[in-house]
Length: 307
Image 1 (tube, one colour):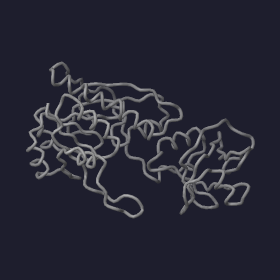
Image 2 (image 1 turned 90 degrees about the vertical axis):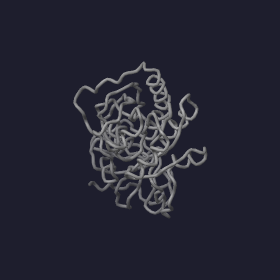
Image 3 (image 1 turned 180 degrees about the vertical axis):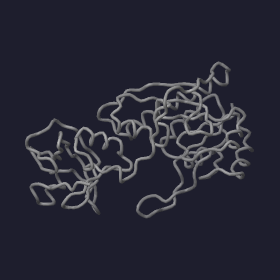
Image 4 (image 1 turned 60 degrees about the vertical axis):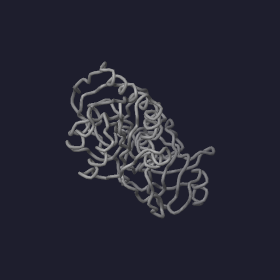
Protein backbone atom coordinates (compact mmCIF):
# COMPACT_ATOMS: atom_id res chain seq x y z
CA UNK A 1 0.00 0.00 0.00
CA UNK A 2 0.99 3.63 -0.50
CA UNK A 3 1.47 5.03 3.01
CA UNK A 4 1.57 8.59 4.32
CA UNK A 5 3.09 9.08 7.78
CA UNK A 6 2.23 11.79 10.33
CA UNK A 7 4.46 12.30 13.36
CA UNK A 8 6.80 14.79 14.97
CA UNK A 9 9.15 13.76 17.83
CA UNK A 10 11.92 11.19 18.12
CA UNK A 11 9.51 8.57 19.46
CA UNK A 12 7.93 8.44 15.97
CA UNK A 13 11.19 7.53 14.20
CA UNK A 14 11.18 3.74 14.79
CA UNK A 15 7.86 3.47 12.92
CA UNK A 16 9.23 5.57 10.05
CA UNK A 17 12.26 3.30 9.79
CA UNK A 18 10.08 0.19 9.90
CA UNK A 19 7.79 1.54 7.17
CA UNK A 20 10.71 2.42 4.92
CA UNK A 21 12.02 -1.16 5.06
CA UNK A 22 8.59 -2.82 4.76
CA UNK A 23 6.75 -4.05 1.67
CA UNK A 24 4.69 -0.84 1.70
CA UNK A 25 5.63 2.39 -0.06
CA UNK A 26 6.22 5.47 2.09
CA UNK A 27 5.04 8.29 -0.18
CA UNK A 28 5.12 11.33 2.11
CA UNK A 29 5.40 12.75 5.61
CA UNK A 30 3.23 15.20 7.53
CA UNK A 31 4.84 16.83 10.56
CA UNK A 32 4.62 20.01 12.61
CA UNK A 33 6.35 23.27 11.74
CA UNK A 34 9.91 24.05 12.85
CA UNK A 35 9.91 25.02 16.53
CA UNK A 36 12.27 26.91 18.88
CA UNK A 37 14.60 24.59 20.81
CA UNK A 38 16.96 25.10 23.74
CA UNK A 39 18.02 28.22 25.59
CA UNK A 40 18.81 30.03 22.35
CA UNK A 41 15.33 29.20 21.00
CA UNK A 42 16.82 28.22 17.65
CA UNK A 43 14.18 27.27 15.08
CA UNK A 44 14.67 23.55 14.48
CA UNK A 45 13.17 20.94 12.16
CA UNK A 46 11.31 18.14 13.88
CA UNK A 47 13.13 14.78 14.11
CA UNK A 48 10.57 13.36 11.67
CA UNK A 49 11.16 16.18 9.15
CA UNK A 50 14.93 15.67 9.44
CA UNK A 51 14.52 11.96 8.75
CA UNK A 52 12.37 12.67 5.69
CA UNK A 53 14.88 15.19 4.34
CA UNK A 54 17.76 12.75 4.81
CA UNK A 55 15.93 9.93 3.04
CA UNK A 56 14.48 11.91 0.16
CA UNK A 57 10.85 11.59 1.27
CA UNK A 58 8.46 14.46 0.56
CA UNK A 59 7.64 16.43 3.74
CA UNK A 60 4.84 18.88 4.37
CA UNK A 61 4.46 20.77 7.65
CA UNK A 62 1.34 21.94 9.44
CA UNK A 63 0.47 22.52 13.09
CA UNK A 64 -3.22 22.54 12.20
CA UNK A 65 -3.89 20.74 8.93
CA UNK A 66 -6.07 22.85 6.60
CA UNK A 67 -7.23 22.80 2.98
CA UNK A 68 -3.70 23.44 1.72
CA UNK A 69 -2.46 20.48 3.75
CA UNK A 70 -5.19 18.26 2.36
CA UNK A 71 -4.32 19.33 -1.17
CA UNK A 72 -0.64 18.61 -0.60
CA UNK A 73 -1.10 15.09 0.73
CA UNK A 74 -3.83 14.28 -1.81
CA UNK A 75 -1.16 14.67 -4.49
CA UNK A 76 0.62 11.64 -3.02
CA UNK A 77 -2.45 9.38 -3.63
CA UNK A 78 -2.07 7.54 -0.32
CA UNK A 79 -3.92 4.29 0.33
CA UNK A 80 -3.61 4.65 4.10
CA UNK A 81 -2.17 6.99 6.71
CA UNK A 82 -0.12 6.08 9.80
CA UNK A 83 0.09 8.49 12.72
CA UNK A 84 2.45 8.34 15.70
CA UNK A 85 2.73 11.32 18.07
CA UNK A 86 1.90 13.93 15.44
CA UNK A 87 0.61 16.45 17.97
CA UNK A 88 -2.63 17.64 16.34
CA UNK A 89 -6.09 16.26 15.66
CA UNK A 90 -7.18 15.45 12.11
CA UNK A 91 -10.65 16.55 11.03
CA UNK A 92 -13.09 14.46 8.99
CA UNK A 93 -11.84 15.82 5.69
CA UNK A 94 -8.23 14.93 6.53
CA UNK A 95 -9.28 11.49 7.73
CA UNK A 96 -10.87 10.82 4.35
CA UNK A 97 -7.84 11.71 2.22
CA UNK A 98 -6.22 8.23 2.32
CA UNK A 99 -8.46 5.63 0.67
CA UNK A 100 -8.42 3.38 3.75
CA UNK A 101 -8.27 6.16 6.34
CA UNK A 102 -5.64 6.40 9.07
CA UNK A 103 -4.30 4.07 11.74
CA UNK A 104 -2.75 5.33 14.98
CA UNK A 105 -0.15 3.75 17.28
CA UNK A 106 -1.11 4.66 20.86
CA UNK A 107 0.83 3.80 24.02
CA UNK A 108 -1.93 2.59 26.35
CA UNK A 109 -4.48 -0.15 26.93
CA UNK A 110 -7.36 1.67 25.26
CA UNK A 111 -9.85 2.91 26.30
CA UNK A 112 -7.63 3.61 29.33
CA UNK A 113 -5.42 6.70 29.17
CA UNK A 114 -6.74 8.35 26.04
CA UNK A 115 -4.87 11.57 25.33
CA UNK A 116 -1.46 13.16 25.04
CA UNK A 117 0.41 11.53 27.95
CA UNK A 118 -0.63 7.88 28.38
CA UNK A 119 2.78 6.61 29.50
CA UNK A 120 3.29 9.45 31.99
CA UNK A 121 -0.15 8.91 33.48
CA UNK A 122 0.33 5.15 33.67
CA UNK A 123 3.58 5.55 35.63
CA UNK A 124 2.02 8.18 37.86
CA UNK A 125 -0.73 5.69 38.68
CA UNK A 126 1.85 3.03 39.56
CA UNK A 127 0.91 0.70 36.69
CA UNK A 128 3.10 -2.40 36.28
CA UNK A 129 1.91 -3.16 32.74
CA UNK A 130 1.19 -1.05 29.69
CA UNK A 131 -0.11 -1.73 26.19
CA UNK A 132 0.35 -0.50 22.66
CA UNK A 133 -2.76 -0.34 20.50
CA UNK A 134 -3.03 0.21 16.76
CA UNK A 135 -6.49 1.56 16.03
CA UNK A 136 -8.56 3.20 13.32
CA UNK A 137 -8.38 6.96 13.67
CA UNK A 138 -11.73 8.72 14.08
CA UNK A 139 -12.68 12.30 14.95
CA UNK A 140 -13.13 11.49 18.65
CA UNK A 141 -9.82 11.38 20.52
CA UNK A 142 -8.33 7.86 20.61
CA UNK A 143 -11.80 6.31 20.30
CA UNK A 144 -11.49 4.22 17.13
CA UNK A 145 -11.81 0.45 16.76
CA UNK A 146 -8.64 -1.54 17.55
CA UNK A 147 -6.74 -3.67 15.01
CA UNK A 148 -4.11 -4.99 17.41
CA UNK A 149 -3.13 -4.81 21.08
CA UNK A 150 0.14 -5.84 22.73
CA UNK A 151 0.87 -5.84 26.46
CA UNK A 152 4.27 -5.04 27.97
CA UNK A 153 5.62 -5.16 31.55
CA UNK A 154 6.93 -1.98 33.19
CA UNK A 155 10.08 -2.23 35.31
CA UNK A 156 9.78 -0.59 38.77
CA UNK A 157 12.70 1.72 37.87
CA UNK A 158 11.57 2.72 34.36
CA UNK A 159 10.96 6.38 33.58
CA UNK A 160 8.51 7.58 30.95
CA UNK A 161 11.45 8.14 28.60
CA UNK A 162 12.57 4.52 29.02
CA UNK A 163 9.07 3.14 28.47
CA UNK A 164 8.29 5.36 25.49
CA UNK A 165 11.40 4.38 23.56
CA UNK A 166 10.87 0.66 24.27
CA UNK A 167 7.23 0.88 23.14
CA UNK A 168 8.21 2.94 20.09
CA UNK A 169 10.55 0.15 18.97
CA UNK A 170 8.10 -2.72 19.51
CA UNK A 171 5.16 -0.66 18.26
CA UNK A 172 6.90 0.03 14.96
CA UNK A 173 6.83 -3.65 14.05
CA UNK A 174 3.26 -3.89 15.31
CA UNK A 175 2.22 -1.13 12.88
CA UNK A 176 3.81 -2.95 9.95
CA UNK A 177 2.03 -6.20 10.89
CA UNK A 178 -1.28 -4.35 11.00
CA UNK A 179 -0.64 -2.80 7.58
CA UNK A 180 0.20 -6.25 6.20
CA UNK A 181 -3.05 -7.62 7.64
CA UNK A 182 -5.15 -4.77 6.25
CA UNK A 183 -3.57 -5.11 2.81
CA UNK A 184 -4.28 -8.85 2.81
CA UNK A 185 -7.88 -8.32 3.94
CA UNK A 186 -7.17 -10.56 6.93
CA UNK A 187 -7.63 -8.04 9.76
CA UNK A 188 -10.78 -6.40 11.06
CA UNK A 189 -10.84 -3.83 13.90
CA UNK A 190 -12.75 -4.45 17.12
CA UNK A 191 -14.64 -1.63 18.84
CA UNK A 192 -13.26 -0.46 22.19
CA UNK A 193 -15.06 -1.60 25.32
CA UNK A 194 -14.94 -0.35 28.88
CA UNK A 195 -15.00 3.04 30.55
CA UNK A 196 -12.53 5.53 29.07
CA UNK A 197 -9.99 7.33 31.23
CA UNK A 198 -7.98 10.30 30.06
CA UNK A 199 -4.32 11.27 30.08
CA UNK A 200 -3.76 15.03 29.77
CA UNK A 201 -0.21 16.28 29.48
CA UNK A 202 1.74 16.75 32.72
CA UNK A 203 3.09 20.27 33.21
CA UNK A 204 6.10 21.58 35.11
CA UNK A 205 3.76 22.57 37.92
CA UNK A 206 2.65 18.92 38.19
CA UNK A 207 6.29 17.78 38.42
CA UNK A 208 7.07 19.23 41.87
CA UNK A 209 8.23 16.33 44.05
CA UNK A 210 7.72 18.07 47.38
CA UNK A 211 3.99 18.34 46.69
CA UNK A 212 3.44 14.84 48.13
CA UNK A 213 4.20 13.27 51.52
CA UNK A 214 4.79 9.66 50.47
CA UNK A 215 8.11 8.60 48.91
CA UNK A 216 6.54 5.86 46.79
CA UNK A 217 4.11 8.38 45.27
CA UNK A 218 6.97 10.86 44.77
CA UNK A 219 9.06 8.22 43.00
CA UNK A 220 6.20 7.39 40.64
CA UNK A 221 5.87 11.11 39.94
CA UNK A 222 9.62 11.34 39.27
CA UNK A 223 9.39 8.40 36.84
CA UNK A 224 6.38 9.92 35.09
CA UNK A 225 7.91 13.35 34.45
CA UNK A 226 11.42 12.18 33.49
CA UNK A 227 12.77 13.39 31.13
CA UNK A 228 9.88 15.79 30.40
CA UNK A 229 8.83 18.14 31.89
CA UNK A 230 11.41 17.22 34.56
CA UNK A 231 11.06 16.68 38.32
CA UNK A 232 12.06 19.48 40.68
CA UNK A 233 12.21 20.58 44.32
CA UNK A 234 12.15 23.91 46.08
CA UNK A 235 14.68 24.07 48.93
CA UNK A 236 16.07 26.69 51.28
CA UNK A 237 19.12 26.86 48.99
CA UNK A 238 17.04 27.31 45.82
CA UNK A 239 15.31 25.18 43.24
CA UNK A 240 16.88 21.96 41.99
CA UNK A 241 15.85 19.68 39.15
CA UNK A 242 16.15 15.95 39.79
CA UNK A 243 17.28 13.87 36.81
CA UNK A 244 18.10 10.59 38.60
CA UNK A 245 16.58 9.18 41.80
CA UNK A 246 15.81 5.88 43.48
CA UNK A 247 13.23 4.72 45.97
CA UNK A 248 14.79 3.21 49.12
CA UNK A 249 13.56 1.77 52.39
CA UNK A 250 12.85 4.34 55.08
CA UNK A 251 15.98 5.34 56.96
CA UNK A 252 16.03 6.57 60.53
CA UNK A 253 18.84 8.92 59.50
CA UNK A 254 16.50 11.01 57.33
CA UNK A 255 13.85 13.31 58.77
CA UNK A 256 10.77 14.19 56.72
CA UNK A 257 11.21 17.39 54.75
CA UNK A 258 15.02 17.46 54.79
CA UNK A 259 17.85 16.41 52.47
CA UNK A 260 20.99 14.95 54.04
CA UNK A 261 24.06 12.95 53.10
CA UNK A 262 24.57 9.60 54.78
CA UNK A 263 27.32 7.08 54.00
CA UNK A 264 28.11 8.73 50.68
CA UNK A 265 24.53 9.05 49.39
CA UNK A 266 22.00 11.88 49.44
CA UNK A 267 18.54 11.21 50.81
CA UNK A 268 15.30 13.17 50.95
CA UNK A 269 12.92 12.26 53.76
CA UNK A 270 9.14 12.05 53.43
CA UNK A 271 6.45 11.42 56.03
CA UNK A 272 6.42 7.91 54.61
CA UNK A 273 9.62 6.56 53.04
CA UNK A 274 12.79 8.03 51.55
CA UNK A 275 14.14 8.94 48.13
CA UNK A 276 17.81 8.73 47.16
CA UNK A 277 18.72 11.72 44.99
CA UNK A 278 21.40 10.69 42.49
CA UNK A 279 21.76 13.52 39.96
CA UNK A 280 20.44 17.07 40.20
CA UNK A 281 20.67 20.43 38.46
CA UNK A 282 20.71 23.51 40.72
CA UNK A 283 19.08 26.62 39.24
CA UNK A 284 21.44 28.28 36.74
CA UNK A 285 24.08 25.52 36.97
CA UNK A 286 25.07 22.31 35.22
CA UNK A 287 23.80 18.85 36.07
CA UNK A 288 25.88 17.18 38.79
CA UNK A 289 25.93 14.34 41.28
CA UNK A 290 23.64 15.05 44.22
CA UNK A 291 26.59 14.57 46.59
CA UNK A 292 28.52 17.29 44.75
CA UNK A 293 25.55 19.67 44.98
CA UNK A 294 25.01 19.09 48.72
CA UNK A 295 28.67 19.55 49.56
CA UNK A 296 28.71 22.69 47.43
CA UNK A 297 25.97 24.38 49.45
CA UNK A 298 28.09 23.73 52.57
CA UNK A 299 25.18 22.82 54.77
CA UNK A 300 24.87 19.44 56.51
CA UNK A 301 21.13 19.41 55.84
CA UNK A 302 18.87 21.26 53.46
CA UNK A 303 15.22 21.90 54.21
CA UNK A 304 12.66 21.19 51.48
CA UNK A 305 10.01 23.84 51.00
CA UNK A 306 6.56 22.27 50.78
CA UNK A 307 4.12 23.47 48.15
